[in-house]
Amino acid sequence: MFTGIIETIGIVIGLEQELDNLHITVSSSITPELKIDQSVAHNGVCLTVVAIEDNTYTVTAIKETLNKTTIGLLKINDVVNIERAMKLGDRLDGHIVQGHIDQTAICTKVSETAGSWSYTFKYDSALNNITIEKGSVTINGVSLTVVNSEKDAFSVAIIPYTYEHTNFNTFEIGTKVNLEFDVIGKYVARLHSM
Image (cartoon, rainbow, N blue to C red; front, side, top):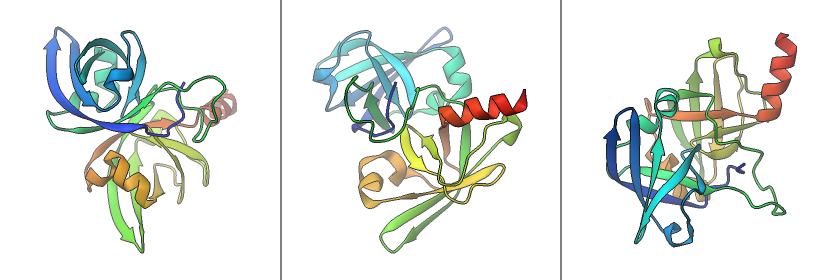
């Protein structure tokens, strides 16, 4: 479980394809605190640490992950949002995030408005995921509040801290992102469709 509150960013420094798997090596300030077999979210995708060397660590994404997320689109020097799993007993500052991506979305609008940024995303509504006005959504691992909820699109507003400390500052029209919809909303939607 995660909270959607990004701890730090990492830089992709290595990508190695092995059969259907992709090994991703990341340089990050939290590397010395990691251990093998630990779960770490990268742009919202829960991946397991398989190797650690100096200030870099490696995680592996399997075919299912590569097919359903943006992890397979990573390039050397890309910036990724990083969050370690939450500690039991800590405050839940964001919302309950599983690290299991529901689908991807495309950024369709970016605008700066007097000290904050607004981003609009479009997603495939045929997958039956929904957003709710003022509900939670996770974009590339960042817990955010939905505004302007529509059937296949929504917007979020980003404060300067989030803009400066996540990879949101790299987003432009056409950027593909990972979405994890609110887990409670997913269960309610599933019950409603039965």
